Length: 299
Image (cartoon, rainbow, N blue to C red):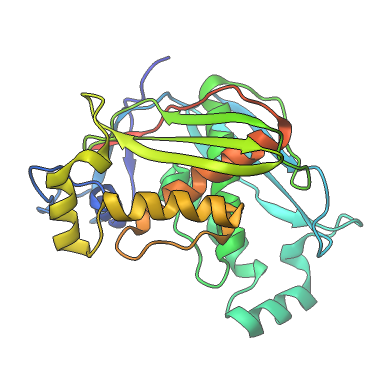
């Protein structure tokens, strides 16, 4: 698979995301004044991760949730880039959540945002960033944002291999016993790649093994220098937040209910994103190892 030679312009927060929870044991990287495009935004080059193949990629939930909605999502890839994202929810009559005035009013009063705002915001952010992991959670719509990120990530993975078969998510299925695993293919710009293994027994998650590996196959939790420097910088380190996240998934049985660890926000979101995809695999009983051909950026 060819690597992406394109330049992608992303928001300035990319630099922070790449640095957050990803410093090496030798140094804590800071923004050192990256090169900018004509509009003042940093220009970031994709140096690893397969290019998306042109086509239309779709995903849909099988069943309606307890509130009468089910999500669907599609992306259109043209010239190797996402040109359109169409994430939304529909009810039994085919009505879209983004057009439901009653829902909009009720949710806006409760959380300060409604589907008329957060749904197009998420879709637009994906087209702009071209990477699910570069899309921010919308304040007041955390659960919907995390669902979007999970589904967007799965569609990008499908687009990277050109698989246009509709992805079906069986949200109400029980977890099937087995061992489920996911791993990033590429070492990130901070020197690590993520993996997560999940064991299901009697329909329950009994073990979660989430961690990071460097090029030498060493675990981030064993890097004392990294632990010390990250703790000094953010108040927590991998020896703290990694077991906290693993334990929380076993306790809650649902990534959506796992709290973000203060000081390890980016790593927490990555964990929740990948754990959600493993849950979807366990709902199907698909124990095939999931490989994430993750994008790596260099300015």
